[in-house]
Amino acid sequence: MASVLSFIAVVAVCAALWWFAYKLEPHWVSRDGQRVVCYGQALDKHGAPQGRWRELRVSKVKSNTVEVRVRRGSLVVDRYAKGSGISLAGDIVRRRGKRPSYWRVAGQTPDPPRKKVVYLLNTPNDQELPEMLAIRLPANSKAIPMLESVSVNRVDDRVQPSPRNPGTLQSEGQPDRS
Image (cartoon, rainbow, N blue to C red; front, side, top):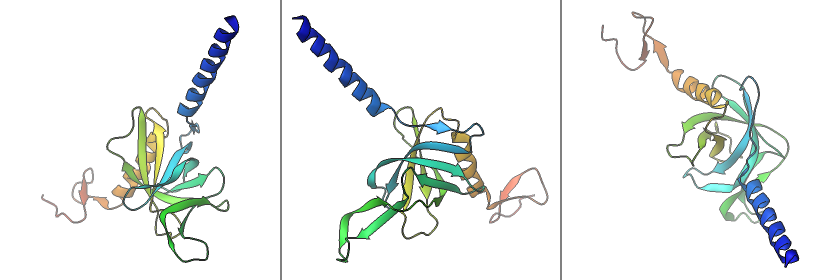
């Protein structure tokens, strides 16, 4: 009887460890908050996932651009089967080479999973890369201000201070009301 109970206990511990490993996600942020390791998934232009969630390294390059590196290789979309010219039903994301890709932060998704934040990234006209990339972070991550600043800076490039009131911001297309 004791051997059966000990076997059940070992199986229960193994199942608990497997569940914990499945739920645990890699997440690391540098001290200055400019570099982060998180999970990401490629998306097509309609928002359908391409491939699985992968571990990514994301770092701020410019005031409106982030660099994304896959842990092993880079994100590349195969649009056709090898040599046949026939389009695959679901474009497959493959890993090729160790080159980085550069993305612009579009913003947060409206309804992320519980205790998570999901940001959408757009690629600036690279045909080999997926249309969009979703990166998933814990809701209390120190990298969120960096991603917000990159997203806000991209939008604020079009906003100029009003010449009459230097303290207020005004869009270029709207006339000054004063």
